[in-house]
Image 1 (tube, rainbow, N blue to C red):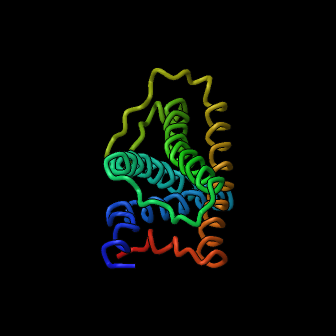
Image 2 (image 1 turned 90 degrees about the vertical axis):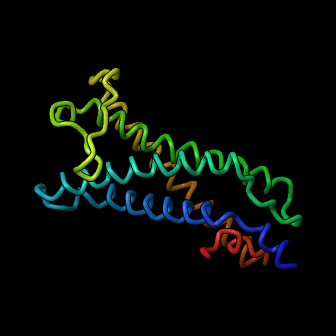
Length: 184
């Protein structure tokens, strides 16, 4: 493959960096969400505040990713990938983007209905005040929490499938898809 063809088969540098930064932030947030209950009570609130800030950061970065992706077509998949795998790729990426938006949005909505947040405010890393979604009914707090948790669980499953598919194509099918998203 020529250098030009190899380059065109890769994502843009910005797309690659956004992919890995968002992936790392999501992994950190999933770890925080699952480990915070094991912390002593006085340590839980500051850790949850970091979780909220990371979630809002992910929301902003995902919006940037989507805008970039709309303006910059992703590289074509190798011809050896079946029609069914192409459809699965498109659907799973669409659902991944939807979840990457839905998780922080439902978290923001949930926080906007929490009595302590209504009283004290919501801050990005303790510095920038984030407006609350004050049109939401505080009586919906528990439902929004459940929805946020459901989206988190769906993300676990889809993340695992995404990773498994990438590894399958790379190591079993020898299609070198990981190079398309390699940091450079």
